[in-house]
Length: 76
Image 1: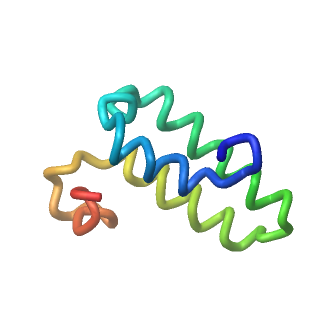
Image 2 (image 1 turned 135 degrees about the horizontal axis):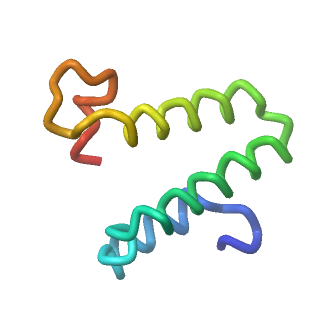
């Protein structure tokens, strides 16, 4: 799936079958970075920008910080 650019499905399969891989933030960041690249390849610039901005905000803010712009999505 990663080879054909379907990063969301790849992440979902990892969540189901091997969630411990997603505990490695370096791997998760690389997958999100690849998703950004795949969106750019499809000329989906606005979606790429929004996805990457959202992911970076999730990295910056503590999951327990209720003032975080992504606090309501911490459980995802």
